Amino acid sequence: MTKFTDINLPEPILRAIQDLGFISPTPIQEETIPWLLENDQDLIALAQTGTGKTAAFGLPILSETDIEQLTVQTLILCPTRELCLQINKDLTSYAKYLPRIRLTSVYGGAPIYKQKEALQKGVHIVTGTPGRVNDMIRQGVLKLEMVNRLVLDEADEMLNMGFKDEIFEIMSHTPQSKQILLFSATMPKEVEQLATTFMRNPHHISVGNQNKGAENISHYYYKVHAQDKYLALKRIVDMSPRIYGIIFCRTRIETQEIANKLQHDGYNAEALHGDLSQGQRELVMSRFRSKYVKLLVATDVAARGLDVDDLTHIINYHIPNEPDVYIHRSGRTGRAGKSGISLSIVHSKELSILRVIEKRLGKDIIWQKVPGGREICEKQLYHFIDTMERTEINTAEIESFLTNVYKKLSWMTREELIQRFVSMEFNRFLDYYKDLPDLDQSNEAKTKGDKKSFSFVTFWLNIGSDNGLTKRGLMRFVNQMKVTRSIEIGLIEIMKEHCLIALDASYKDQLLKAFNRNKYKGIPIVASITENKTERKGRRKSEHPWQPSRESSKKAYH
Image (cartoon, rainbow, N blue to C red; front, top):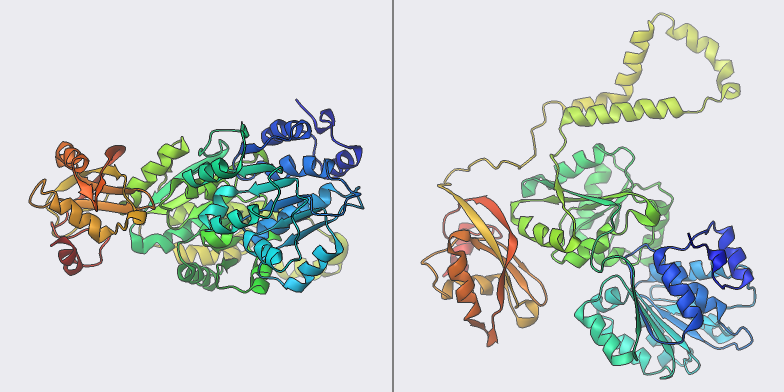
């Protein structure tokens, strides 16, 4: 096994990483560090979140920085202030025994004058978010004429967040002769375009399967009615007494609502979303990192760039439409070789996107039954007993009280004492879960008005929101093909460049032919069938699962 001491790193850096407990490099570090120490060619490195990318580019950068030349030699761009601060913190720890090297970070949401002062004093390495870096360039305090390395960390996230124009502008202020290091978890079309535009014959390093999930993460899903998601969430959390995780929601409002409900119900939870001030955000993250807060309820945008170790669970309160987003979420647990769990709470209309994610993930997402009250009570009871067994007894502190305590409790037998002790601590769970209904929707009961069961098949189409596609427009387009007089429509998911639509499998072949010979707003349709089918109970012809009422579906349908 390769060790850091086998790599040609300077002694002060080896000493610093030894202090940090680094012994053997991760796969991305083992591939990247020696190569960067010997080459000035551009590099594209693909590796999942949490695999040690900061050290992979940070150690060679520190090794080759000219301390005598007090100019910005390396610029590191990243998507969020949290990641910016984390990278700067990591580089500072790697440079522990390089006292003359100067590092700083520039990012939005913090006083700009302090960051200006740091730049004006002179720095070797700057880590920043694209927006604030551009501000500093425009104000003339960040000079990039001497930059010889530009790092794009989490390039896919930066482009997803809309930083393309800022990145292009920053590039125009840097020398053409610089080395570009692009690090990303995925390689979507936008990242490929960026690489083609600015990079020259880049060397490629890829660790693990691109767009695949980490092997040490287990993936499960629970199927419930939409209105039961919060109740299912509480049961899942109660079933994992040592949980330390992130719950992902779609919107800021929903994030705050779920966090408020959890707090009201006695859980250590906080919300993280874009409406928080920088001070509030830092307080939430400090409480979460210290594990005082066990559950962070967050949106994808707010959670980007968070670097938190030892997460046990990622919970998708709403499953994301894009498979890559799911992979990014789940990659926040199971880091540094530890195991992790990714859970999704879904209702029947979300099953087809779950199967698309499963295919991209490269492993099964396994159905789990929503735990019942008895299971949860048993789990919590044994957790309580285990905690009691591990509690250290400080005899010196309590000895003076014990004589009276023994005397007061002497009338009870050992069994009675244990029973009262457990009941006092445990009655809350017993009372709450007594006679609660089963939430599991694994076998959907027929609802009033259902006449038969339909088999759905999911179609992939090459049109999406970038083409002006909406759910209403897609339904109208399906009906205009006139494959049949009326057709059952299931889940519709619209992404930027494509969409998924579940339709009655009885017309699979006719629909596939019809799609492929039609155009949408002048765009020739390319259609294919995904592998999964989902069984759904039949609905009346005018009712569609994403719509709240029969009346609204009639308007969409006709």
